[in-house]
Length: 266
Ligand code: AMZ
Image 1 (tube, helix red, strand yellow):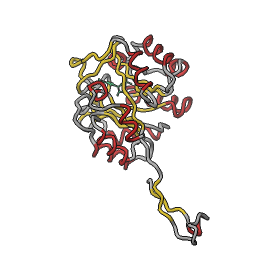
Image 2 (cartoon, rainbow, N blue to C red):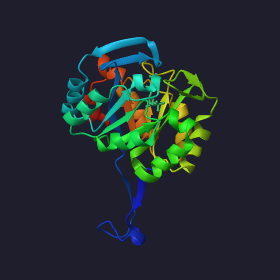
Image 3 (cartoon, rainbow, N blue to C red):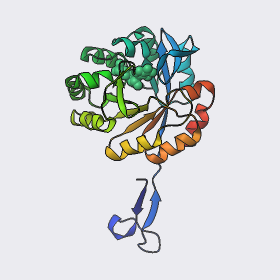
Image 4 (cartoon, protein in one colour):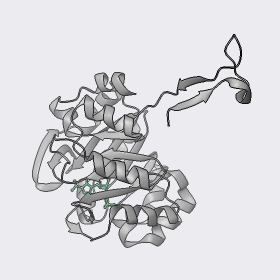
């Protein structure tokens, strides 16, 4: 909570005249993280994660990454879409090129299903690894990854109509997002990305109620994604207390101006 009581006898901080407690609003911030989704080496966006609906936004993802960095992005969210669909990293050359070109940290997901690959990517300069399918199919990997790499591991909670989806979002699991998240916490996961697939790439609005529900069920940092397309959405997410917001299509269409967004909420 942002508000805390300061001053008075118990804290030792006093107003000049005596010991009246003062209500202080501690600044809440939210990171705005641009997404770069990679397919066949290009920067693309999909509609609700459907690979048939691809729009290519740039042939040069390195240039895109540098652009977001120059506008003040605190970190980048990279997704290897070919990797997510096939089950193994497919855009490694371009990912490494981006990691070598930017100074800001990178979080990366898509097709990362083995501990050796997690280790290889962290060594290549990726700051955080996102596990989605592997988190559902191979909990032992998650546990071991958290034990070895701690906060560098994030689990993606990708929900389609109330159930977790995997394998490039093409397979439903029937798993409840909150129960899934709680099971991941028991394995040592300390941060989550919640994506509402039905909102992703639609420029509608985030699933605020599902995000709020998850926030109240778990007390760990949550990054929100899917449908974020205005400054108002970012402000509401900030009020909800999410740690960060991933913005994809809205940055590429111009619905959100990154510099303005950062100035408004960060
Ligand atoms: O858009 C999609 N179809 C899609 C997507 N963006 N499919 C998976 N992903 C992202 C998830 C997560 O960040 O949001 O890929 C990552 C998970 O990949 P994997 O291979 O671990 O399930």
